[in-house]
Length: 339
Image (tube, rainbow, N blue to C red):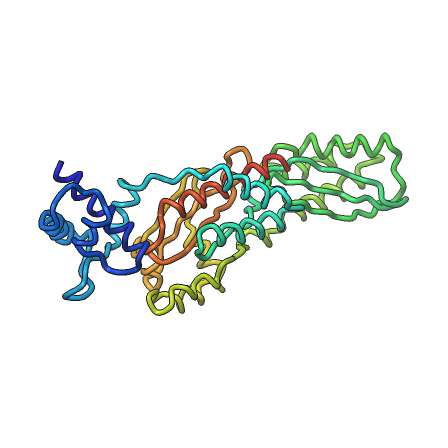
């Protein structure tokens, strides 16, 4: 009973501090929350919470504010992720469904996440090495030229032109298309590259040289890791609303220019749908100890192939932010599923 009451006091302190940006006193807690006890009892509970390192008093005459440890307990034991309303879900779906390609999906996602959370949003581009081959198309463009189209599970599309010595018949095109798809479709990139290396050897002599050229173009497209450390960032302007009250604005602005740092902030790609929260000093950079990161993985068929999330001050609306991050990730995953 006593522990439950103190947890309720901690929850109230976190919620009020996030809402008002001011240290919270016992009288305010009694007035704003149905705690069912006197201000004196609340003061005693606050003293115990302070002794346990869950809250602290920034000034002698001020109320209390949560510590990183307090936020962690709040997130782990007290937070219930808010369900998105039907209106919010429709808005997210409509905003993302209009995307025309993978770049558009990423850019729309980062803008939407920044708008929903009013924080800095970061979306990692799907990592090529975690992709699988969805389909390969080969189209005759001219008498001696083929267009080879590689479609990955991430929604990424690569196109390559291949010159061949002679014009292929329609039957030969069908054989070539079937050969490369049989070798690579459904395979992860590393396995697909190995399988394509054998395509030329298994092709009839008249088609062998062209098959080897097509396979080589596909291997080159699959080996292109330009997007593996790319991220999109949105909502930088949201930092302005924190002003001097957020003492990590400058180092965070500097970090936003370094994609490697942002990827490390997001952390390793977890399972799709599992939201992780790193608070303050739990993060990898001491100069960003006043920030929290809320992130999750996304990808088709619940296979997490990249991360997305937000970076902001430790004083944030954790339940709402976690709900927004999870919802956007789910919709992006669904789009990649349907791509």
